[in-house]
Length: 390
Image (cartoon, rainbow, N blue to C red; front, side, top):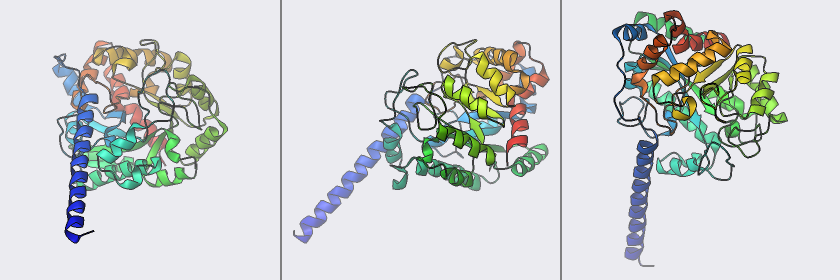
């Protein structure tokens, strides 16, 4: 081939790759804007009393999928629900960043298998490292590095919590100044272990401190509420639960089938969380917890994080969230209920991280005392982490 022709072909191929890459990146950006929305319309006013209370709280949220999307955590974004500036404006003291590694195409609540994967194309489109394109473990590690990088560049505004000593030091900083927030790494679906329970050590080293067994499909550890078989905890799943407890990593039963929840609660010896859910008592569907599950989580000393989206609470605002919280408190007790927004989880939310005072207002309207509001809005999470982290 003539050198000139070869050069032209190479240049054309590179140009094509650039164009295709740019198109895919724009498509991923458009997807983010389309799926991580805020429900339009006027929001209820927040009283001065509720706002003053909210500013005194240690607010904590157990679930956000923000790391899946190509945004700079340190910059205020015009899309999605979470970034550091909005966490600070909403007085969020702790945000759990929960890592998604695989979701099925045509995702639905009732029945999904594991034969397809939306995240592969998203990883390519968002220019993730090639190692992440076909490895779920590498996707988890990459998103963990993104959080660490943001914290390192934040000039102290963002701290990643890995231990009780980290938590104690962070709380001391909060007592002497504002303008700071913290993150906790969680994993949404232990299929990211890629069949090797030894990878829990790798994930622990990367900072993960909360691990969900399943997401939207059944895996070798147990059944999903949205899977095909919806079975219970497997022998390998029991081994993972045991190893999580040995490493003082929190077990997250969000998205688990009723059988998996029952089996996991039967073998758990440490507190268990359900990071984001609703309750069937106010919103009856397969996604949400029944009363037995609420009581079972409470018996472990754990927490149920109440979500904000329509399927979780059968409503579109703080009052619906507060009603679900009230029901959960009535069954599980005030010490065992928290927030689990599912921000940036491809759901429409009533507000972003700046709007959490609306829940404070709604809880007061539901008859919660200020002390009870303090527990639900974050106090319970901080208490649990002070006991459960390594």
